[in-house]
Image (cartoon, helix red, strand yellow):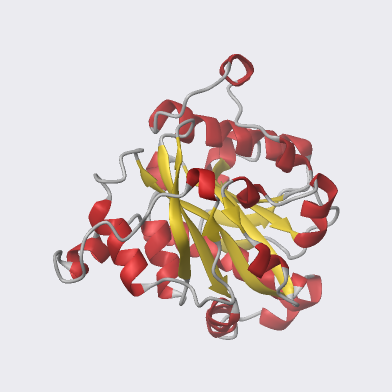
Length: 272
């Protein structure tokens, strides 16, 4: 966990987004992750996870945890309705690697000279899966990226299930239309590599495949994001993972355009 927050809480009505700076906030994020990943999406808990009802791993200690909170629900753990885990280069060095390195060769990203940020463990409470909540999460990420001078973001995004052929159209569309350039492209580890171009070009409806993608992946693509080479099956979480790479220029551009229209922008910047 970091010390002081990198930016003041951003508000949109009853919802706010901020970086956790207290232990109870991180625990609330882990409890939300458990409810979504294990109880709702069918991930397979070990005995310790089942007993605690928390989704926890070694990276949580060094990561920053972005939270969406609903102030109408209170000011304690019950208020946490969305989360994103953020790991900077310095934090990953404390563990010895980024989380994504268990699935992908990310040498190209590690060699990138600017600030890099791994995104992961994104989820929201089922009642808050709205465009507004997702936009608020992205506003928080943009503020974090701006304050920490991040030039490149990456991580793993997921399709539901571990049957690559059931996700053939989505995987093929991503491989055919959004693969990262070679100097940035992560590649699935050979022992876990699943080919993404499962269908020939032109044999499926590309527009329908795009529309059917999970909202998070579509959000990355709208920001000019790319995918890596190869998918990875995650049996524990019952997902098919793809590597994502996003340059942050479009993220921060949207951040500026949104906030420069709001009164108090300069004051908010002074608090950051």
